[in-house]
Length: 69
Picture 1 (cartoon, rainbow, N blue to C red):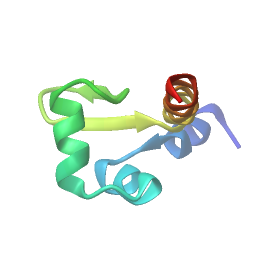
Picture 2 (cartoon, rainbow, N blue to C red):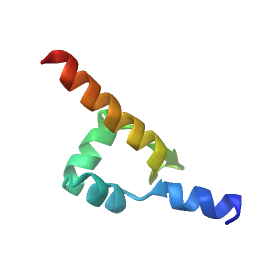
Picture 3 (cartoon, rainbow, N blue to C red):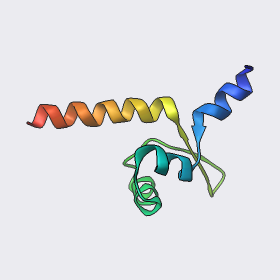
């Protein structure tokens, strides 16, 4: 694979991240609006999610949850 293909596979759309996280689309958009989830914005409307950053974010969410309990 070349570098462009690697990046394209790593960057997920809103629909893909919704499915990946099992969240409704509306929840993903709300989390983006509130900056509660890592995302990349290209121009005014195009939103993408770096799968590696999302996986790290998920790990952090679990860590926070376990530290509270």
